[in-house]
Structure formats: C-alpha cells, structure tokens
Length: 224
Image 1 (cartoon, rainbow, N blue to C red):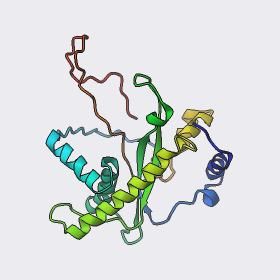
Image 2: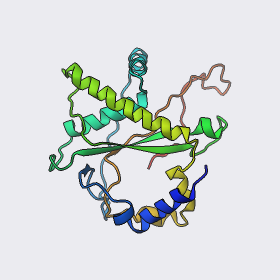
Image 3: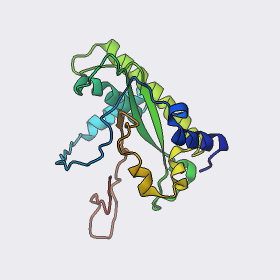
C-alpha cells in the first residue's frame, strides 16, 4: 500500500498539532473520554441467529436501493444511536460519526489462506442523523435512511477504488512504539461515535477430511 507525501505530512501534522490540522467538530457526539484508570466491567455476549431468508431479503433490498449491506447497517447504527442512547446536550451534539472497515484483499491480491491486515477504514459523518425507532416509521423517513446508505456506499466505493493508496491503517507501520501509541490515547476524546467490525461469512467446507465434516470453526481469534 502506497502512501503519498501530502497524505503522510497531513497525518504527522494532525498528530503533532491536532488543534490546527485535525480539528474535532464541537457538534460530534461520542462516548466519554478514554478513562485513565480502567474499571473492570462484566461483558455481555449475545448471539442473534438470523434466518437465511431474512438475510437474503435484506441484501436484495439493499441492492434494489443501489446500496450495500455494510452501508445500510452503518446508516441504521447512526439512526439508532440518537434513538436509543441517552445523549446530553442533544441540541449541540448533532453529528454522528461511524467508522466502517472495507476489505482491500481484491486490490492487493492476497491469497485466500494468507493472514493479512488488508483493510482500510472509511469514516462517514451524519451531520443531521435520522432518529428513527424503525417500527411504524413513515415511508419518507425510511427513504431518507436509504439515501444516507447510498451516500455511505459512494464513500466506500471511492476508498476501495484507491486500491490501498493513502490508507490510514497503513500508517501503523510508521509507529515505532505501538504500546506508547495506544497509551497516548488515554484521557483523550474518542475519534468516532461507533465503529463497525468486519462483516463476513464462513463458507461451508465441502468434502473436508479433517473430521469436522464441514462445520464452522474459529481458531485463535482475538478482538481487543
């Protein structure tokens, strides 16, 4: 992945003088500052099983609206935050920023079995988030949601067309001290309102001879 000098210099300037080169919008809503002392919390895990018919119908609906599943989910999350999260000073916090991953494997031609951080991050800021409860919403509200999903899809497409050039994630290779880099984020504002993880599926293994008979399996997967 190539990094141009203008992109690299802007990134350096933004990290050294964020007040001038990486100004944060005063209207952006995020969670609280990254805490100095981490408080142990109890994790809550939920597994939601969605029928294949529902998944296929949702994907078909996204395509019929000239957007994608990833973009539509990003729009839904942005609409759901103001509806279901208690936000102080709602009149001032008018922006919702969603970070979304986009795969670069097709552009980088990574072999299917090779482990690689072949992704980029696409940020989309909703300046006037649509607050919806989903159930019982008017068709006009839902059409506005689809319009936002199409805008997100355009942003994702533009980033993928760069084929990995000026990828912000590629800047991590320039970090000499990774622990210090992450610790430097303590007590600082969060960069986005929410972040979507990678979306994907496991394909059924046909004719597998390892004794698993095509069952899904995950090995050594860690999220932090």
